[in-house]
Image (tube, rainbow, N blue to C red; front, side):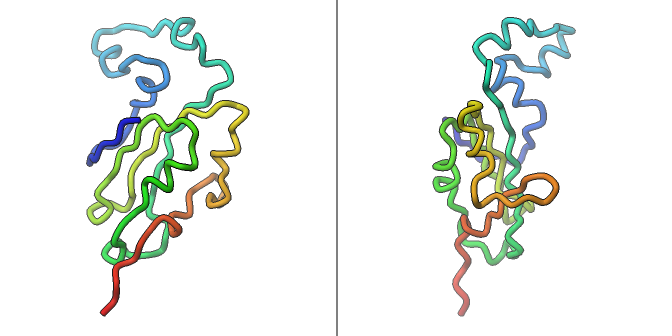
Length: 132
């Protein structure tokens, strides 16, 4: 699995990770994906972008670290982790995953909390800075 640190958003990158084509190049070249070919072997698979927003209630200046490895351990097939500078932006990153229909429960891990949609309670992944 690829791990990168970036200041960029994932936008349509899930197309490349899930289906193997770059939507920006296809648009530029006025190409259309071959969906029969792109979907072949993907039956029963769900490709997700998980936005790791700072839902901790803790100011970024008080966060010493974020345990990306503990987060990755939840998922059987993480595809790519894009770490974001959470001191500069109000999120920890983006995680792209592939989940089979038999493992769908991993997307609803006990640390995820329902708020109309599902968001991650990241508090359990953060280490706070020591206070003097």
